[in-house]
Image (cartoon, rainbow, N blue to C red; front, side):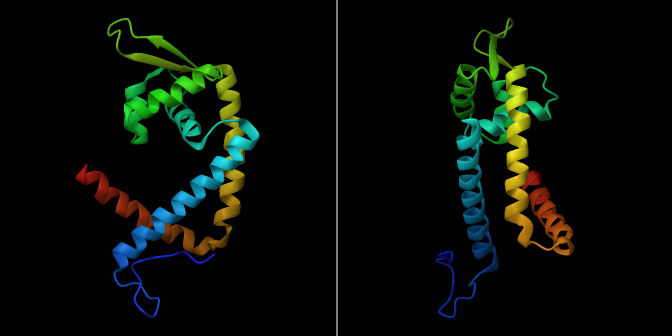
Length: 159
């Protein structure tokens, strides 16, 4: 299926690199996320967004963290994180404790079951991503990553 892009001229060439590239990145991210979501739901009964919450714990060294810190690191709203955390708590993958200093704040901790599900889901994600991105030649990967890192640096500097 050929991607539909409203920013192409009559010859099918990009009118503007930035707009066309941004649209392509959005479309690719959406389709990859959708594919990963289907794989995770089928095998682990968790969504991609819920997996990303577990990634937040992995990045914190599995230490207890606040929902607001997870939201900040994943560029999500606290309400979004709260909804996903509630599901993960009900599945036994996370536990939620009230902060003794601030009762409105919740401290989240990953359970042993959560760590196991994360590790299994990570294998699935890595397998799927390796399959999806196998079309990118090894020699091109370093250049792509270097350029994306440059764009990310610009964006983070504007934050």
